[in-house]
Image (tube, rainbow, N blue to C red; front, side, top):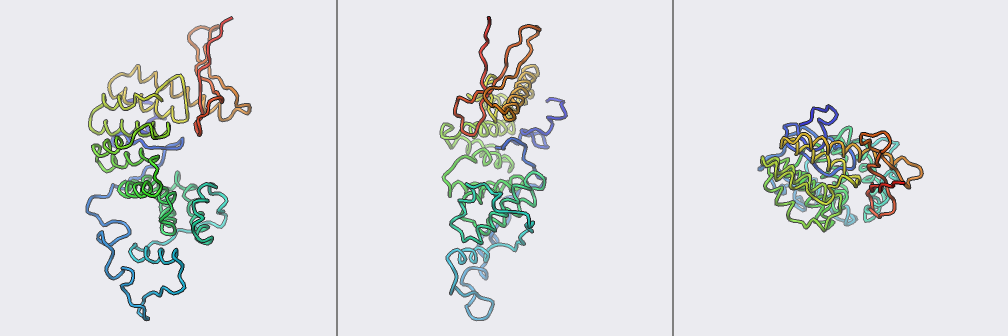
Length: 347
């Protein structure tokens, strides 16, 4: 492995030496130290895996013995009451007064329109707090995500958020469970890599590989394809199969002459597996590719003109520098920034 101190905590390694890659949005997600849940533990939202008899909806009479009355309640309020009946006690974390629902992504807020306005605003503010805290305090972010889920458990985006915060705190059992719920509600496989990595977090690389193979790669976006490949490579390393781990990363996106937002992480993952195989020279080359890709992407993101950004690499001569990577905006890459090679021009 590389001795570079600024790469020791790069995505792809757990503290015990195993890989721990998962989908990210340009920066490492904080990772908690809480051990994974063991099989047989009580399931969240239930008592011993089943609704508590005394807490089941309708178990209490509707006289004045602590029971509830259905009169005047909306369907949404009835659903919340039923969920509260089987969930453990949870205190909502405080939301600062400066938090505004306008901070939430417009698309995300639109998903909350099935809720009452008051409830939608409350859920939105908890989600804003998740975005604020996920990097600095994942445990508190998870509490806000839990509060949002208790208010809007049927909203796919809310369950996805709860899964991401659970993953960030190291609660992989909850993460995989919530990701399955998210996939069932939304029909999307775009969090497949996080599901694969959660299985790895539970010490189940075989199941992780099976899950990763269960979805056709061509049905996923390029960024998700890359994230899945990295997670699958990590599962192979968990099994002590570095050659197979390297093969998992041999995907079309592994192209040193083209760089997208996901390229630096892919290049670094490839370099780390090469290190495991004792191929240090090749690993160093791919780290250089990752650094150049990061530099080109940064330049593209800060260039005011944003038409073309070139990053030159010296090839040993003073008068013949060849462009290594360049930003080209002519190709539609959806959310990805494309960095294309510039052809050599000789007079």
